[in-house]
Image (cartoon, rainbow, N blue to C red; front, side):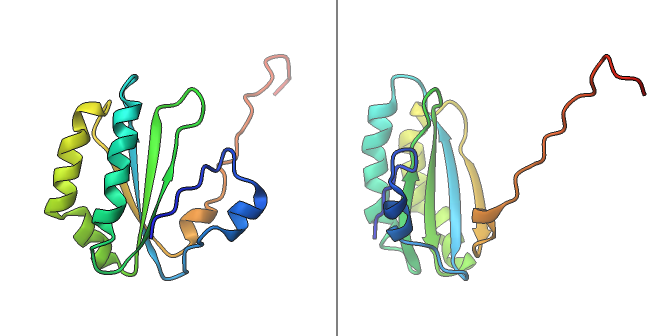
Length: 138
């Protein structure tokens, strides 16, 4: 199962009908910063991930979040039934080969985060505190 949804341009009904994660699902969140001019090569590489990951036990789908304007950060979301199955994918020889193949296109090493359940979809925003007004009295 491969899902690609560009959240910057998707209509609300497309987002609502898009495959939603189950509460017990594990999601591997992998961020890549792509070097300028290497985006096409990276996009081609992304197409290789889904069919390879789909062969792993517990695989429930993969989604890609493309960079917003002015950014070079791609996010790959891979969903698995269990944490053990997600870790099997992350540490697999197949994935290591894929990462080695694309590493020359990356600004730095990838960032990997593994989250269980739906909690990470609903992280509260960090409250921003304005600096004190320099004209105000203490």
